[in-house]
Length: 254
Figure 1 (cartoon, rainbow, N blue to C red):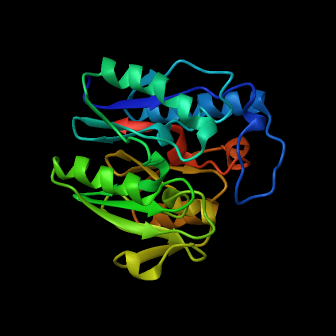
Figure 2 (figure 1 turned 90 degrees about the vertical axis):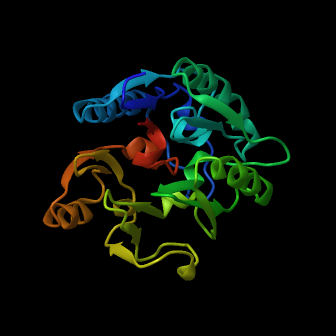
């Protein structure tokens, strides 16, 4: 396995049928989404990541959101058990790929549920959102599994948001970032940097001070640029219609 691998999955032609929970349904264009996904992948590859694709699955509308299917911590890949029953079959394709990378495999078992989008790793601390997709048993199982890698799991109650990483992510220096309207328990985190747009709270650190962000958060991008980070932006408007963000579309290994 190369040092830095990015796992991705092309969008389904049926993505417009994907699940929406906290937003009004708006029609998503699969053709435009495919172009946007290609540009996103190109940005990640341009930052030095080796792209590995899970085979596409047209019968799985939400399958482009590959982050929800696995949590990778060092050499351990924890296969998730998505909280939406319609998404359970997405995990098989991801399992095949992570096995090919030579990672140790574990999995969340019933009755536990866990979406990878609820898992935010910041150094040795792993914040896990307790919301509609991740339950207490899923958190318990993940805590036991990640303890073998020296990680501490901190549960975070969620309200009115799909996943933890829909509300909070972290900069390369470990600083947490959230929108001023973030729907998370205030005392769950140390101090956070607030950003002016909801999408500005979604960053993917690509190494060497590089951040990947959505094009829909230009003021937040300016803020991070002024702090000395190198900001890449990607238009992911079609995925945002399905409550997706930049973190959802890849899993970084290494």
